[in-house]
Image (cartoon, rainbow, N blue to C red):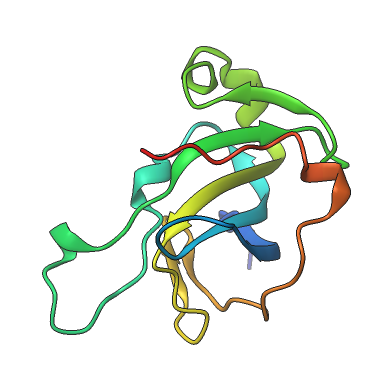
Length: 135
């Protein structure tokens, strides 16, 4: 009898590094995460958070995204440049974005499954170069 081996496709995994409250006129957080094992670009707008009783069309999505280097202390591309640099989307991808009305008790929905959020913490100094502007 001959045995066949099958290679299973591994879906990228999301690791939330932190959620950091931002000083603004409305509730907003900077969310930092790593997509481990990314195989290329994905739709950041598919990251969202369910709001019970609201249509998914009304759920919040990321804004003012930035791709960072692996240590998270340098911007590699902003939201306008990211799609033009597909090589930055391969492997482990570190990403930050602003998210309005984030509910830390509810998971984020991502293209790679749901992910629970950690408790909010203070913005690390290494991310001080990321500035929030009203959309």
